[in-house]
Length: 137
Image (cartoon, rainbow, N blue to C red; front, side, top):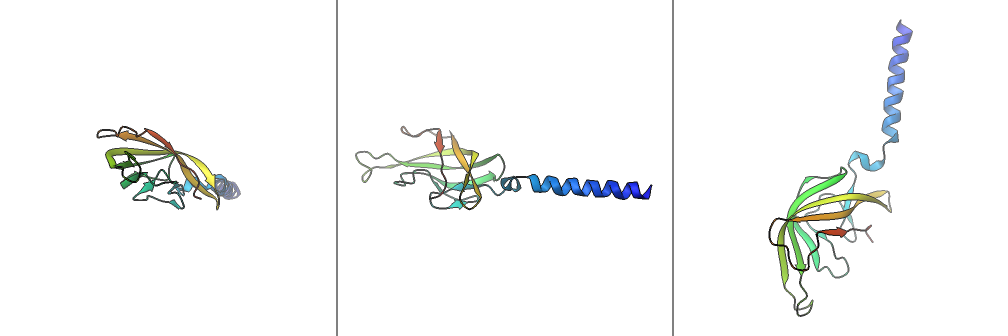
C-alpha cells in the first residue's frame, strides 16, 4: 500500500512538472504590446503610426494584460493632417481598447498583434476601429 501511494505521488509530481514545462512562454503572462521601438507591459501610451507618430493611444489604464486579450481605457489621438500634417489639429476621442492575437518577435517576446477600439465619444472622421501592431524595430 505504501509503495502504491509513493508511486501515485511521484506520477502526480511528474505530470505537474511536465505540464508546466509544456506551457508556452506567454502563458505565464509575459505578453507585451509593441510601442514602435520597444515591447512594453501595460504602457501608459502606445504609438500606432510608428512612421510619423500621428496616431496614438494616450492615458491608458489597463484592467487586464497578459492573457489572450488585454483591455484598457484611454484616449485615441490623431493628427488630422489638414491642411497638412505640420499644420493639422489633434483630434481626440475616449476609447475602450482591446489588444488581441500574438506574434513572436526577436528575443522570445510575444506581442499583441491587433488593437480594436470602441469609441465612447465621437469617433474622429479618419479614425479606424482596428489597427495592426508589429514587432518592435
